[in-house]
Image 1 (cartoon, rainbow, N blue to C red):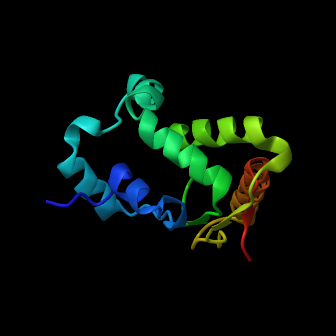
Image 2 (image 1 turned 120 degrees about the horizontal axis):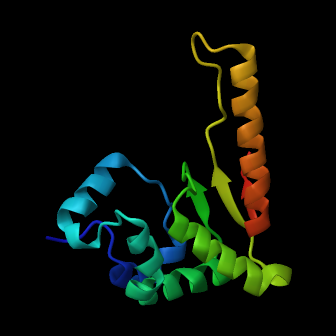
Amino acid sequence: MDPIFSPQRHAAHGVLGQVIAQLQFRIIQKALQSFPADAIISKDDYEAYPLKMGAFVSALRGDLVEKTFLFLGFSFTDPNIDYILSRVRVQYEQHARHHYCIQRKVSKKNGESDEEFKYRELKQDYFIRDLKRFSIYQYR
């Protein structure tokens, strides 16, 4: 069976930097079924990721330096992507390549108070501002 995401396959075809990064539950579920031993479950797994997946991390870092990414609906909550983005930012801060993201703007939920909605709006605004540290800009 052909894996949904193979770092070696994407790196070999040179499209890693052109892949629109959108996480969907069914893709994650399929990947976990295909590669259960590679699932990241504990903090130990996160900490060992750069060592275990060194080739992939290196390829992604290189692509983040050389190519422009469009992150579509990507949450940026994964510690591994934060680690990789942080290393690229520190190393290439003056000459960082610009990347873009598309995030759904928060909208008021039924029954949500104005105060709760305002909090979620501010939280999203701070999040988008924080992404600029990594040269990731919201595409509007």
